[in-house]
Length: 137
Image 1 (tube, rainbow, N blue to C red):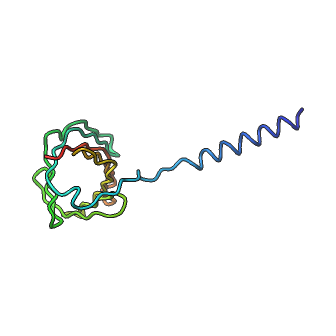
Image 2 (image 1 turned 90 degrees about the horizontal axis):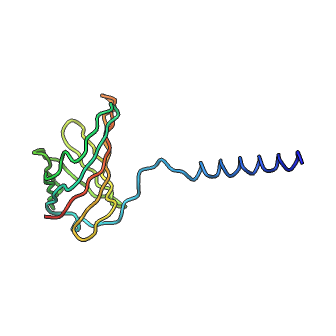
Image 3 (image 1 turned 90 degrees about the vertical axis):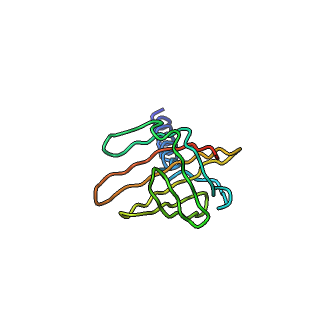
């Protein structure tokens, strides 16, 4: 009986380790989109974010517009940046002050774009991440 109990404990341990190994902390996988799919003006319909310092916000950008231009420039909140589109719906936005934002487009259907983003500063030791929903204007 003791041997059977040890077998069950061993199997439980193997299943637990396998379950933990299958969990991933990687960034979410985006959907393939083309530049033409995302170029244009988008209106924020929902957003949320949090940072490593404990601050957070919800829907504080609703109504603001994001413009993605065909020349690789973008404007948001009165600031101008550069953008590039990589594989699997990953958009990189960069600008002054070594700003690098990684945006992953999670879905784009019927003029609604859902994305998650993250950026941080190693020199200032903080990270910000969140989600946006945009409606094509």
